[in-house]
Amino acid sequence: MADYVSSRTGAEIDDAVTNGTTSSGNVIAGGYGTFVGGVYVGANTDPGDDNLVVDGTASIKGNLTIGDANTDAHSINGILTGFRREVIRQSADDNTALPLTVAQSGALIMLDEDEAYTITLPAITANDLGVTYEFIETVASTNLRKIVTKYNNDYFVGGVTNTFDAIGDTDDLKTFVSTGGTDTTISFDDDLNNCGGGLGARVVLTSVLTGNTGAGGGAKLVWAVSGNTIAKELADTGAAIFS
Image (cartoon, rainbow, N blue to C red; front, side):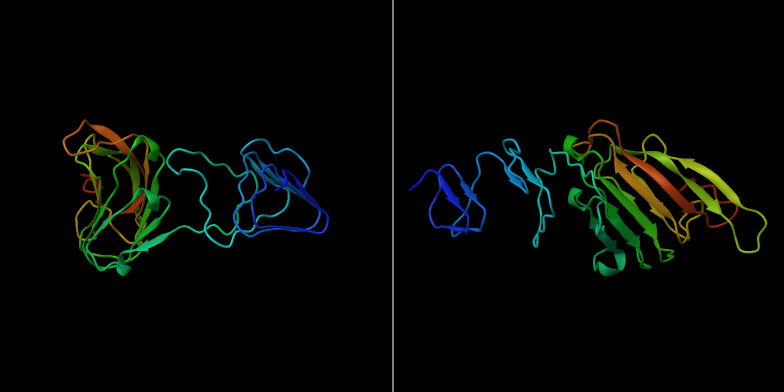
């Protein structure tokens, strides 16, 4: 077995090559290939150890996993196209409760069914900061739909604008509703006074602090809140949105 293989028309490898292969034709590996150093596609240039550099286009038919999602950072310097976010519909869920996972970060959760529903946010570790979800009410309901934190001392921080503008009404309402110091629930309910649960209400939640690992832990402002709620009437204060 040679330590080095050079080919101008192609090389088929059924065994291992200890040092490498240089070819101006094709290289077909019948087994598997491992590279102790790096791989450069498109030029005879050292990419550096443990690096993959592609001058052209890399096409992957299956799934692509890059590093450890919990510990590694990733950056894209070019244009990202074809990206789609996960859409989760209440109407597609036969259950009355939805426990979200960290892996579902970036999802749009649609409250699109006239039924009571409880959505529970995940526990947040130091590796989970930046986990984000967006919620929007697309079907009005007099049943309570709510978002709750995983543990009773994981709190919300921030607030939402609460607006009301009836058709043909010259009066309107625009207020900002802040969270309290110990709020763990966000409610959407068209039949609850001061709840701001009208059609089109939208809330975005982002984890900004490591949370508790169980009930009864220390007080922590884990979830940053932003968004806009829709008041039931002109006198709606939004006081029942957070609790």
